[in-house]
Image 1 (cartoon, rainbow, N blue to C red):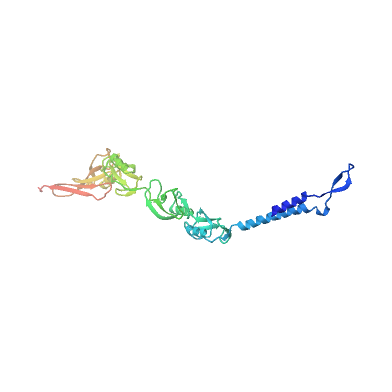
Image 2 (cartoon, one colour; image 1 turned 180 degrees about the vertical axis):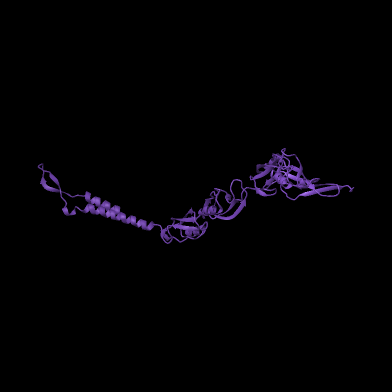
Length: 371
């Protein structure tokens, strides 16, 4: 119809009237003169063009109204499982797209939808669902060398928790420090995973072997083999063979950490000193002088004929001003006077050491009948 109207308008414009004027052009022929249209009809072409445009617009609007898609309201599916939400949206004549997002919600739950629920959208258009992928994974951080309290806080900051602490010996970390974790460092695990901490209880403990009485060489070899360091001290001794162990610390059987130090005391030869000369001295003074010089003292007694020699040292062995090992024994003989009508000889022995003041006396006597 619009095309027909346009064609008609064109024909009207092309059909301008021409009439013959009765006047001649000098040749006896009639001249044709165009007849001017009245001025009030000059708007006609523009009117016809406007009419064409209106008709075209109306046709387009009618076509759109006849062919436009039907719109439906978007159902609310937030909180549903993805499978359920998808079924609901397809039933409402929508397409479904899924986007996974880390969330504290359970895995597979719808946490968002676009367009939002309650709005209208064309049938067959796509509704995008944001679906929870669960809390997500985190990497276990290194907490080696930290205390249990510090390691626990560090793990808590990355949303992990400590559920077990296991002590075990370590030569690398001091007691109380974390040596390892389970799951291990950098392993990806779900948020909230429980982590076991392995904590150093110190170096492994072992029993100290007994080496008293062994030679210094044998004792050192045995202690070193058992994992200990050895510290040696020397001590003069007259009772233990030179080079043998007199004592040890810690004592045999003590449980200590491997790598600890065991101190052994090794016998050396006693120092040589000068024996004081005590012959002619009172017994008490002689004993004091000898013990002060580091000697043990054995005291014997012998009957003397003069009261002036009673309690006086009459003999010593080793002799005075000789040299002897410190701790050696010096024997002194002390005079004992007894006034008697019979002739008799009595000998007694007393032993005294530098560490004892209790004498031991042995005596013997013989008598002959009075004349």
